[in-house]
Every structure is written in structure tokens, then in C-alpha cells.
Image (cartoon, rainbow, N blue to C red; front, side):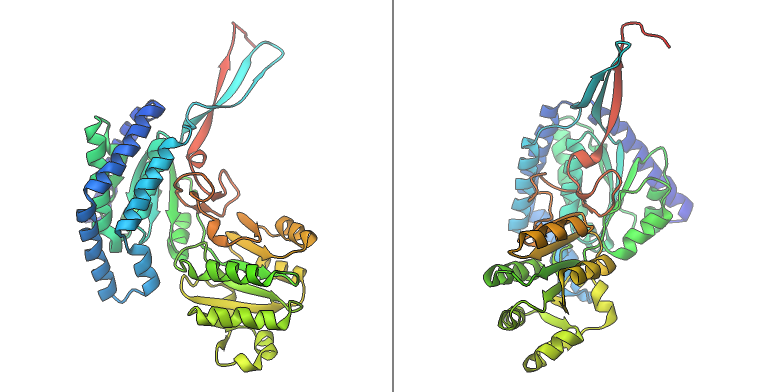
Length: 424
């Protein structure tokens, strides 16, 4: 397709979504919750077809040489589909934010002013690999009275089409406009560019994926962007850290699912943390199958570990591996750890393991990130774990929404002014 044809096709989808958004904005909470439950039931019904489509995508991705971490993000399974269904059910149980009053006050002239939550309108979602984003994003959009245009990656196209077909079947069963959820199946990059410049039809663009995708959308878009960020997440083990706790947190944050953005990519070790404990943690990482890329100071401190400590390069400190690799640096102080994170962190999730309350308070206050942890794994940066239900992404911005973006992140406010004839 030519560029003009692509733009016209995407614009037609956006126009249909805008019409559907007007309907969804006025639905009751009960109607929207019924839609979410119907989608969950349809995913169960169509599980075999969805998994068959996903298997085709996996085979094609593997044949093209995609790494294991990419295949993990792409893969669906019976358990992962059940997880999507459970997420839909949990989302249906959450309070509906639309129409809720966020503030109310009376002016001296008798005017009563109140701000209420309203939908954003039409959301453009551009994302890579992970097909669960298709369901999560659609669900959050519908729960908040929005419509959504989904543009996933070529590698997950068959899976995404099967998932959206299930969503459409569920919406039709309730006589609700299926155009509220649409999949942009045009694979050329110009379809993304079109979405990013459809001012008046699309109200906000959300990119979710690697740095290249996010940067492309940010630089191209004339539509407002809710920017998600890559996750170069750090764990700092302070000198007073409990050994068992530190080891459990680091191993979990790195190995439980290394292909996701809240996995730890960097480990900072206080040099005053006992040597045998540092050595034990490094050995535990290696035994867990983690490749360790260590700074010169760490390698000097542990000459007996030279075979498992690969020399770190400058680029390792800012890398989002999304794999069983971790960069390790030995630091002399809390302040050095904070400075390292300030230089190399991406504003996603950072953690300190310490028994020193003052050190924890300093870290929590000084580290600039969407989520900052004391004695817990970075893997909790997730809409479900925060109690938000599903999430549409994790924002590393500071405007409108930050951290896991749940229901409220897809709303705006409207001021309603109640008078008794006042004039100015």
C-alpha cells in the first residue's frame, strides 16, 4: 500500500473508533463489566484457536532467529490465557472511575464547582511482541469508556488478530459496538506514523516496547504521547543487608522472568557488606544460570571468581538485557550507589536492601524513579501487583501518569459548574 492509502485506511478505523467511543463513554459500569466478563468467557471458548495462532507466530519468530527472551514475551499458554481471564475478572470488580467526583467546592458567589472523571476518547496503542498487551489494553480502555486502536508487531500478528476476534465476538453478543477495539493490521511502519498524526481522531498515543519503538513514536507524533519507558532496574545491597533476604530478592528480580521490564538488570554491592556474603550472592547468581558482567573492583575483590565474572563494558551499565545477564558494580557508599542510578537508571524501578532505616529513607527520597523499593523485588512494578487490575504500560514520565498505568491513567477530568443564575 502507498503511504496515502495507509493513512486513509487507518483514519477510517480511527473514525469508527471515535463513533464507538461516544457510545462507550455513556455506558454504565454494569454494562462495561459485563463486557469484560464476556471477553473472558470468549477467550476460554477460543483458547485452542488462539494458541494455534500463537504457535504459528512462535515458529516464525524462532525461524527468523529471535532470542529466547523475545520468544518468552511472544508466547501464550493455557496458564497465561487463564491469567488474562483472571485479570479481566479482577478488573470488572474494581470501581468504575468514570463519573466519579474528584473534588467539589463552593465559591463565594454560590457557584458549585466539581471535577469529575471522564474518558480520554480514542487511544492509539503501539506495542511489540507481547500479545497479552492486546487484551490488557483493550480491557482497560473499555472499562474507562474509551475506544482503542491496537497496532502490535508483525511477529505477533496472528495471535493479536485471534485475540481481537474473540473480543469482537464478545461485544457483539451484548449488542455493543465492536469498533471500540480495533486492530491495525497494516504491517508497514507508515501505519504507526499515521496513528501518530491523526489529531482530532486519536486523543493519545501509548508506545510500549523497546527504546527504538518508543523514540520513533515520541519523535513522530503530533498526538499527545503517554510514554512508557525501558527498564534498566537496579538493586543496591547495602552494608547492613540481611543475607538471606538480599539473595532472595536479587535472584527473584533477575531470574523469575528476565524478559520483562521490571526485571533487575544491574546489581550494586556495598563494599562493606561482608565479603563472604557478596561472594555467596555472586555464586548463587551464577548457579541460577545468570551471566555476570562485573566491574574491575568486583573482579579484583574476588580473584577466585574470575571464571564466572566477565569484565563489564561501559555500555553494560545502561543496558536493558531482558535476558539472564546482570551487570555488577561494587560501590563504596550509599551516595555512590545513588549517583550511579542517577546516571544510568531509566526512571523505572530501583530497590535497596538494607536493615538501616536511615539509609532506606535516603534512598527512597533521593532516587528518581517511578517505583522505589525497600527490601522488596522490583518485579512488583505491575498494575496487578499494585491492585490496579491490568495495566496499559509503565510510565516513566512525570506528566499525567507515572508508574503502572491503570484505570485512572486513561481518564481526564471535566469541570461541572452548578449555578443559580450567576453572571459575571
